[in-house]
Image 1 (cartoon, rainbow, N blue to C red):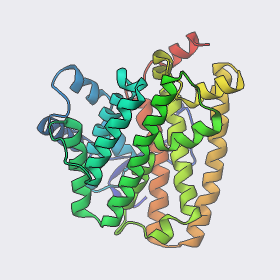
Image 2: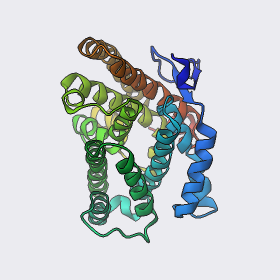
Image 3: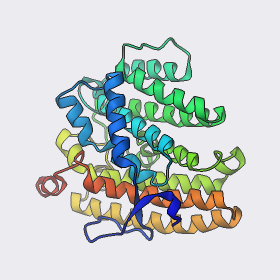
Length: 329
């Protein structure tokens, strides 16, 4: 790993839930990035001082950005950290309280936020999340090609639509089938937006003929699946506590009428098979584009996969998994 990337390499340890044939790295600028994101949150009044801000700090937003983008420069890492903090706030708004089971309200909110992001409606600057999301959008707009911003916004739109799908399921007390969940999970996790941010590590974002090539799409799809499935493993306690069915382990359990432990074992098997596929498709990508940009992009995808787990193991956002599994059906 080139020294100019300025990251801290962390080898796999016995506590890891999943094994990867590549190491995790953490961006060395994580501490200053966290301080600046907290300043950004206070300046835009995204979360009030006290319990709300303490809860947001406990999510480890800057740590997640640092694990996902270990070689990002200061500007890109700050953008990712700020976006992650806003996304956590948005995620909790959609997943918790009355909004989580009110698809009509979710649809209205989607129209508002998407209209503001795409510039179709006048932004409501009294809304803290509007202020935060538009600030992230405008920073991308001012520093990167417009085609990249449009690509990122399109992927962000899928996240909003997936939240509507989840709200409809909760309203109907419906557990989706496995294939439907696997498809929609790629959108509900907003991981494609982070796959886009990987391109900011390059001198220029990937051109359309590369980023839309089936091989690169497969790299991004597998990367998305791995991050979302491992997130479902680590967040299982949260979903079990709230009664939310939007977790691959719960979907497997309910669809196949198996125990929770059997569903966990099945997720781990699916995960390992997906990693084997990922290793194959990476070689195909490097054979098609044998250049520094593609090698960096693939290395960054490796780091994002392994780093996501390191963040999840450290984050207080997901805790108490073992005890909840022991008492669940």
